Image 1 (cartoon, chains in turn brown, green):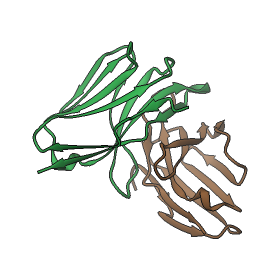
Image 2: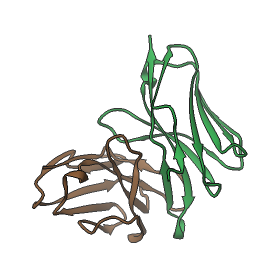
Image 3: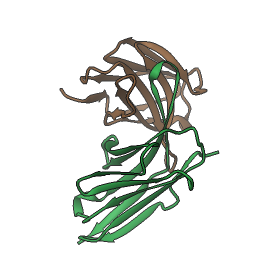
Length: 112
Length: 115
């Protein structure tokens, strides 16, 4: 695998379910990010992890819970989501001190 | 309040001609600007960037221009090719603590290259 990978690519869940999104980067980077893209809206930054430490939480509801066990892996744990949380969730990584972020293909999430 | 704006949701250009995509920003603290290209069912792919200390950066068919006084940047693609048809996102960077960048994105412009 190369670049940034995300699984699953598509996810349908009910409002009472618990699921997790996974991201893995193979670029040797040390910063990882979660973004949300809703229909007809710009990409919105959700969380930033820098050397496994969370450095930014962009006022994200607590039903989204990130986890970064190491510099290569990032998870987004989901529970009791709402239909308006349906969106494309994108993971990205970068090297600290540089400006370019590299994105994964995203997980298309539908909450019923 | 949207800090990065792409006011044209779509643009249609004939193959071989120049495509010009525009982006405006409001925050003068942004110090780095990037363009990403996105195909359906894929994540955004980095295309080209420019530092605020420059006014032009060129890479092959792609050139980005920055006008800091107008808080405006543009992406020129010449000549345009059918494979350039995609959604293009402008992004601006503001440093967060400890060096991880916080990107603020525009809404995107869908570029269609007609044969």
